[in-house]
Image (cartoon, rainbow, N blue to C red; front, side, top):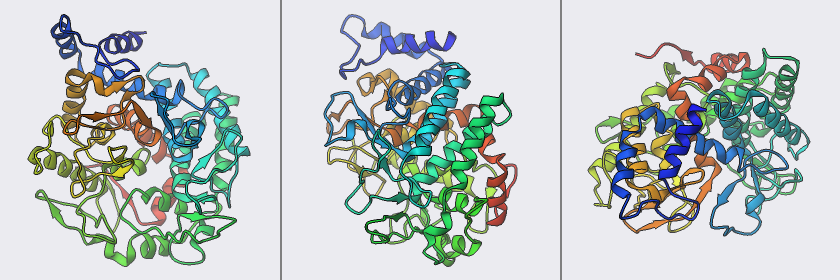
Length: 452
């Protein structure tokens, strides 16, 4: 009840679904004062509840899983209103656990929703165990692009990452909860990670029964796909060899050719095929919703240093603001892949068109809590038209006076999850205690030690 009242208090001061400001000339000063008096913990409660609701109230009703996108203006491309996203659903099932832990819903309610999701996933299209990028409410594949109409191993990895945290959460519960955990274990064991090597020392992103390997996307690092390689090594039924990680992901060691940007080492080479110094911020989020980077090291990197530096580099870039974009600074920063004035785009310092994506700073809360909190408070206090029913809108540009009341699951999902990792370490604890995951990390030569 306490969290509900806090959320309602903040919501009353924020934007409605139509994207219009809640402040009037008469009461704006008073409402701003009230917002500045709200504690950091209350603000965190509120943004977690709003983003959780994307995956609770906003879920696709047949499956209980995450919609690819929710547009409050009701303008959608083709049939995307009811498309189910596999990767976004991985973050979504974790968000359900946030709802339970923060008492937005009961444990029974969360369990029932997760049972529904697992039922759907068990019957949905799979390709050598991997789900496609998108599903329709009848469980059938719908193409992400022309030839991308089969298994998507990266999206599957994000889903399995989330499901394994759910398994750990319920595995010692009552009979019904243990059954859910067992069913998740079966879904996990059904993924044929080794199939997606084509017999080579690299993992391929896609396979289609119609186009087979025509997408031709071998995945080398560094990017968001670290979790795919770790899970592939961890599989108790279809594992890859360490050579696949070393030669495919780490590119025979070339992944360690880092650079220095804004006075900080990037730790790893962020781009195999161009000279961009750092990638979009989601690279520090997706794999690490479950995988705990604190004290995590292998022969190639210290992953806490990697993600912390990535975050502070982006923060320093915004403070420097070399293009003099409106609003950029200590309390307005963060570039990642998101909507923009030019459609969906991958934003990063060397490809900055003035679009700030709230998930970039908010999901970085574990790495830079002071800087992320300044962003959150600034957004909710001074820019309430940029916040709607399910939390901050996907992206905005103060420079171009542009924002749309639209959301993407892959951007909203990491927000409540990574904030929870900052507050309690819940998902890092759950995922890292999974026996299969620990075996995979050991196999790849990772050490897990206490951070400095």
